[in-house]
Image (tube, rainbow, N blue to C red):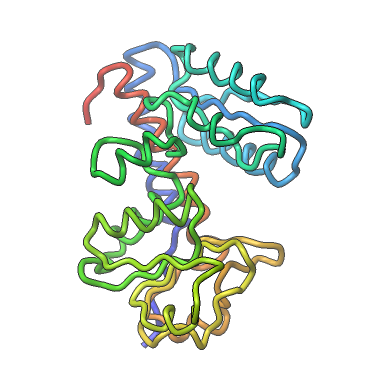
Length: 283
C-alpha cells in the first residue's frame, strides 16, 4: 500500500484562501489591512529570501507587510529599539524577527521584547510557556503548521510514540510540547543522545528537526511510521533520507512541498487572528 503524502502545499493554499474573506472583514471594519512587520538584520541571502516569501504570502491574502532592515553591524539595543517601535505601532498586528541574527546580538533578549499579542511566530518565552500549559498563545509557526497538517490528514496522535530529533527553541522543543498536549508519548533526541537509530526505530511518528541534510537514515525508520521532515537544504533534501525512507512510511511530508508552505500559511493565520482580536472580530 502506497504511503499517504502529507501535501502541505495544497493545504496551505486552502488556508490562505480561507483567510481572504477574514482580511476583507477586517478592512471593512477598520479601513486598513492587517500588517505583518518583518525585521531582517544583515545581508544573509537565505534570510532575505524567506522574508520575501512571507511578504508575497501577505499579498496573496490581502494583508500588508512592513519591512524593517538593519545592517550586519547592528547592536542589540538598535534591534530592541526597532522592536519597541513596532510594538507601539497600532497598525502592526504581527512581528517577525528573521532568524538567525548576527552573533553580536542577544537574540533571546530581542525575541522576548516582542509583545505577546504580536508574537505571531511564537518565539517569546512567555508565548512558549503559555502554549506548553495549554493557554492562549501563538505557537511557533513551523510546529503549529505541522500540527495543523497532522490534524487535517487525521494522523492519530493520542497514545502514539513520537520521536522529535532536534531541540531548537523554535522547532524541536515546541514541537515536542504540542505533541504532548495531544496525548502523544514524546521522546526528544539531540546531539548527545546515545543509540539514536534504536530510539528512532521505536517511533510511530518521527519528526526530523535537526537541521542536517538526510541525517535520519531510512533503516532507522520502522515500517508504518509517519515521517514529518521539517528540514530543507541545498539540493531539495530534508533532514530525512526520504528517497529511501518514504517506502517504509504509512505517511510522510515531501520535501519540498510539505512543512515549508505550512509554516508560512500558519504565520499568515496567526497574524489575521491577531488583527481580529485587535479590532474585536470574533470567529
